[in-house]
Each structure stands twice: as structure tokens, then as C-alpha cells.
Length: 105
Image (cartoon, rainbow, N blue to C red; front, top):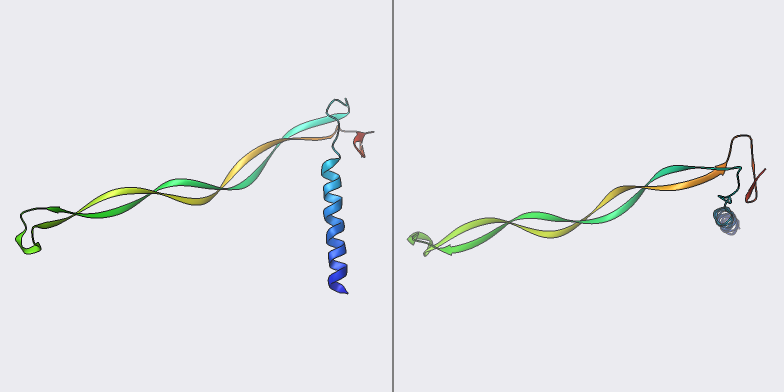
């Protein structure tokens, strides 16, 4: 019973959030003011990850059967999570007005 009640409450919260996001203020209304708002988004980004690559060349080292070990830095594509700051315009009622549905009164 508690789980069922929790599911109903959760569905109600989701529905009210969706209704709130679909009802938006009319930006042409003179009583609607707007401002820019920043928010963070987690993104997956690629980058060149350096690693030590070992290879062998022919040389005059008789003790190592004429093979010498060499190193070079190579790069491979790797991925990491990062934060990116995004901006959006947010509408709200101007000072002295209150929101009623999608109008400022």
C-alpha cells in the first residue's frame, strides 16, 4: 500500500512539473520580464590521452640481439565527463505582478 501511494505521489509530482513547464508566460506581455540564467550540464567530451609507446629498432647492441628499445609519446582518444555552463532566458512576472496560469496580473 505504501509503495502504491508513493507511486501516485511521484506521478502527481511529475505531472505538475510537466504542466508547469508547458505553461509559459507570453514574452510579448508588457507585464512579463525576463533575465538570463546560467545552469550546469554534464557532458561527455573526448580528448587526446598521451601514452608511452615502446618500439624496437635495429642497432649495434650485440647483447640484445641487435635490437634497441625506444620510446615515443603517442595519443589515443579517451573520454571524460565535464561540466559545461549553459544559458537560457527565463521569463517571470515583473515586480508588482503575480503569475496566474500563463498571464501576469
